[in-house]
Length: 325
Ligand code: AMP
Ligand code: MG
Image (tube, rainbow, N blue to C red):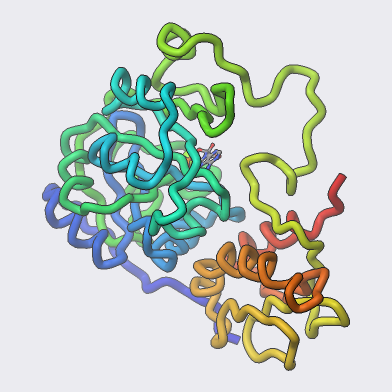
């Protein structure tokens, strides 16, 4: 069994957006300053690079990541904006507003970046250095905050180096962050606008533009089971964990050498956890789509070691396996 480790890297402190863009295009991880906080960027279309974000952060779960763009025009090539989104983009972009919108079917953003969801969170940062880097990279850049999981969000290049210095390729020094608060996240994928996270753009400012917003969790509302939260993808078929072989009626999600099965998706032949993470959402969607035509009614998932990225993979699989209401 090979536990997957990323190459130990010593982050270079760089000031050239061009150099940062080149590293991103090569699949490297680059932290960069925005007006909100420093983000840990990777090419969103490269699932292996996105998996690296989770390894570097030591994040135990796959949350959907925000994709960053140089312009609204670039962002709207990957999502379908409605009238509210168009209006908010005109008024608040570039700036600390993230919009969750239906994904364009043809978008090359990896399933891992969007955690398998049919929506994508997009933002156009206002910071001039970030803007230049994004324009030069010429592709969506997925970026959560550039800190180890559970640590506070970094607002300077020094914070990033202290937290992730040994784990990423470079930090693009963009000076201190002007806002210092995360972006406001607004879900515009349904008929009503829902405030998912308060942040740099106030609720009042948004309501002045598009009218009243709903809040994600209304006070007193029952909490849906974690696997069913709207922001978490789960396959429609039941999932059985730690299965060394598929049983009758089961498709198989394999990790390494696998017994013969009616329908199988191989996460990683060589048991490489980064490769498995990169393939995970693709695999669940694919098995879910193809099981019925083979007369299969469930997914059996191979055991995954609970180390490194295996923790996040197991988190996602156990949510998928949790009883549904
Ligand atoms: P962070 O990665 O820490 O900047 O946080 C990103 C925020 O955006 C989290 O609260 C995510 O849950 C939210 N988010 C990103 N993509 C989506 C999506 N497709 N649907 C709902 N929420 C999302
Ligand atoms: Mg964070």
